[in-house]
Length: 181
Ligand SMILES: [Zn+2]
Image (cartoon, rainbow, N blue to C red; front, side):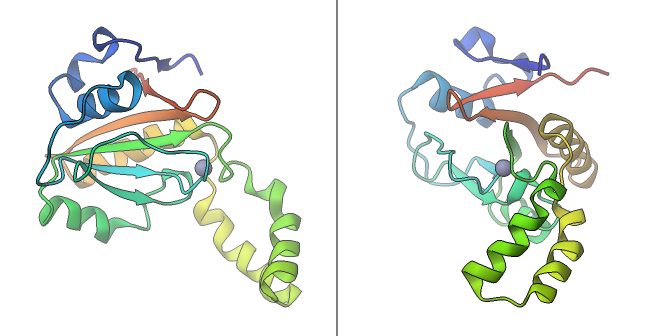
């Protein structure tokens, strides 16, 4: 977790994010900067579906794709759309601690039992559903996953800036993730 750099002032923002939409995001969310006025999206944000997270950003500022673990591997057409048609030049990829997509195997029985009780599924469907999809959505470790996903997106979209960030659920702030060579 010591790969995280907090943002308590403008000076904490990594130089690579200064004067970019990622820097603006950090300013709005962490530093309560006054909202700018936007007529088109500046940024694509990929973040987890988790209910504990809410971003403080102005209207029209960003496209947001919410998917378990901030995993955009199965949202590629939407990413392409935001870049190609929406014209965004940056992606902020926001993982978070205590993510439910870490160690899914530990929640296998709760998942199956929940589908049976809450959704009315047969046990066999629920088991097959879990076994089929859990390996696709398991992220391992939040920080490592966001870093690997950032690398993947940079290879896929070489002209786009991709910023790996982490949202801490205990203080609701964004942290920059340092990438060492
Ligand atoms: Zn999550």
